[in-house]
Image (cartoon, rainbow, N blue to C red; front, side, top):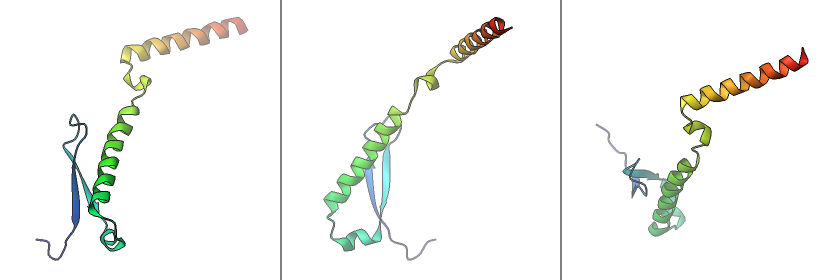
Length: 90
């Protein structure tokens, strides 16, 4: 049992429900003292949550999506090029 702990949280529904249901933000204690209104804090939380989902979606590079046969073909092509270059040098 936890006693004497009070936190302010903001729960934001996910902009992309394929991966996440919701995001939970724990608000700093000094935010309420600085005169920031609740609407601004909520907008910031929504922007951070949607930016996180957009940022993760952009990080999928082509080389991460290549199937293992693609890696095998690329390795074979590289080995063939190296062997050809070594053949010309010797």
